Image 1 (cartoon, rainbow, N blue to C red):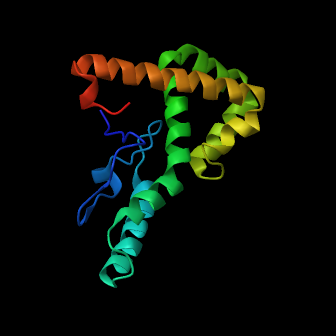
Image 2: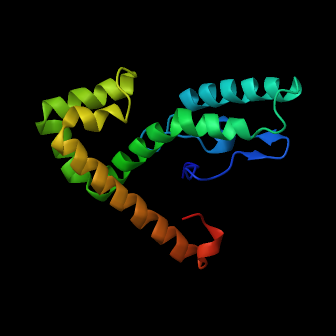
Length: 156
């Protein structure tokens, strides 16, 4: 199991910031994490510089900058992951029989297209994937809460 960050989970506590794998910044679909490590490391370094220079009173700006830089990418990847896991045969058929979908997915893997851009490229099919993905994310969170036995332990 890869550590997947809930988009509301804090990566700052007092004088400490988490980045990369420590912040559970893993691409939910591919399992890749080097891009997130670079982005979060750069943002953490920038916030540390501001903090040490006395320009800011705390490190909360890192949380906001990280959410701004990565949230859409991680949410869009998590949506696709949810659909692919729920319906692997449908997903395989989409990749095999829809050359446009396959081409766009390859462009995402190559870094030529972002996960949030993919649904826009797919038009109505992209909207369907997004909504279906949202349902899968909600079902996954519900299952996690049930397994934990307490709703207060896990974020909503």
